[in-house]
Image 1 (tube, chains in turn purple, orange):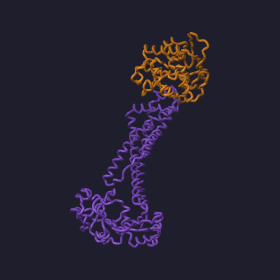
Image 2 (cartoon, rainbow over the protein chains, first blue to last red):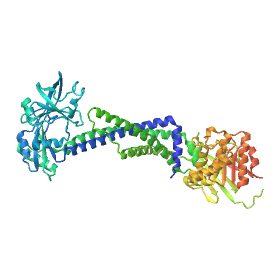
Image 3 (tube, one colour):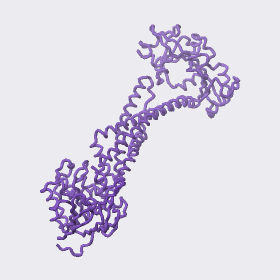
Image 4 (cartoon, each protein chain N blue to C red):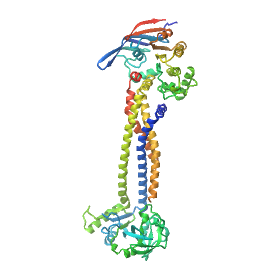
Length: 405
Length: 233
C-alpha cells in the first residue's frame, strides 16, 4: 500500500496548524465524551456484577411494591404471616424478615435523619444476612441477642464531619428518636454513603423504640434450597403468595426477585441514561464529521493545482482519492487520540469524585477494546467525512486542475 | 546531426480540440498534425491564443482530442481512460512547467520522489534515485529544503530532477524559462539540451520565446490551432 501518503498528509496537517487544530478539536469533544461515558458504563457493570456475586445467587428478595424506599412509609410492608407462608414454599430453605425505618439520630445536640435496620443476632437467620452483606466489623463487636438498647453503626460515623461534626467512639451514647442507646461497634465500609450511614439495632431494640413497626417487615430475604433455580423459585413463590393474598396477576402489592434481577432493574436505568448521553456525544461526532467535510472541501479547493500536478506526474484517480481520504482520517485519528487522553482524565476525575462521595467501588475501567475502538471510530469518521471531498478531488480533470489559480 | 532511421515517438494525426463554453464552441486545435521522433529536440512556438497550451495537453497525454488520433510509441491513446493516461504519463513523460509546480509541503527530495511513489517503486530505491538526480542538477546540498526556501532557478532544477525520476523517454517543458532570468534560463535550457545529447531523450519545449529556437532540431510554428510552418535544422 501507499504508506507514503502518510508523509504527504502529515505535512499538510502540520502546515495548516490552525485549521487542522480546529477540526481536530471538533472530533476530540465527541470522542472524549464517548470514551469517558463508556469507561464509566463498563465500571458500573463490573460494580453490579460484583455486587450480585457478593450477595450470592441463591438469594431472593421479597419487597412491598410501591414503596419509595424501604422504611420510608410503613403502609407498605410484608407481614410476618406472609413471610412464614413464603418459608413453606417448595424450594425455599429459610426466610428472614427485617425491619427498617427512617429514624432521627442525635449526637452532641446535632440531629440527622438516617435509616435504621434490624439485624438478626443468631442462628440460620443471622448466617443468611451476614452471608449477603459480606462486611465484618471495623471496630467493636456485633450485636448479640439481648442487646436491646445497643446499636452498631455504619462506617462513616467513626469520622468527624462525615455525618456528625464530631466523631463517635465505641461506648458513646447517642439518642434515637429520644431514646438513649450505647454504641458497641462499627461496620466496615459498604462502598456507598447511604449504606455507610445506617444504624443497626436488634429486632428487640427496634420493636422497643418503634413498636409501630411490629409485623411490618420492610425487607424479606430468602435462601433457595441447593439445586433449585432461584428465578424459578422466585416465580413459584410469587404465584403462591399471590393466591394466598387473593390478588390477580399483575396487581400484586409485592415483588419477589433474585438479586440479579433486582440489580438488573437498577442497571437498566443507568444503561438508559448512559445511552442518552452517548447519543448526545454521537450528535457531536456528526457535527465534527460535517466540520471535517468542510475542511476537506476547502483543502481540495486550495490544492486544486497541486492535484493537477500530481495527476500530470502520474497520480491515478485512486491515488488522489487515497491521499485525501487518508488526510481526513488522520484528522479524525489525531482528534480521537487526544479525545481518549482527555476522556481518560475526565473519567479518572469522575471516579475520584464518586469515591469522595462515598461510592468508592464505582470506578471507570479502560479496556483495550475501548481505546482501540475509539481510535478506529475516529479514524473512520474522519475518512468517511472525507469521502465526498476526496471523490471530488480524484475526479478533477488534470488539464482543468493545472490551469486553476 | 544525423537523423536517420529514428522512430516516431509521438504522432498527432489531424487532431481537433473543441471546448464547449456554455453554448459557445471554442475551437482550440483544428487539424493539427505533428510527428516527433526519438531523441529529437523540438520547439513548438506560437503566440498566446494559438492553441499552444492545448497542444501541450495533447502531446503530454493530459487530455484527449475531440477528433483525430494521437499515437504514443505507436499506441493510440485518443480514447483512453484517465487512469490509463496517468500511468502512461507517469512512466513515459517528464513534465516541466513554467511555474515549477513543486508541492510546497514537501522537501526537494520528497518532490523528486513523488512520481516514483505513484509507480510503486520501493522507498530505498526512490531515495537513491532522487538524491542522485538532485546531485546531478547541483542541488545535493538542498535536498531537505522546501520549495519556498529555494530560488526560482533552484526550484526549476528540482522540477527537472522530478521530471527525470521515472527515467522517461520524453521530456515535455511548457515555457520552462518563462519565470526565470536570462542567465538561469540558459542554464535550464543547456541542461535540457544535454539530456537530448547525452541520454538521447526526446525533448519538447513549448514557448513563445523565439530565442529558444536555437536549441531545436525542429521548430513548429503554431497559429490558430494548426501548424503553419515547420523548420528543420
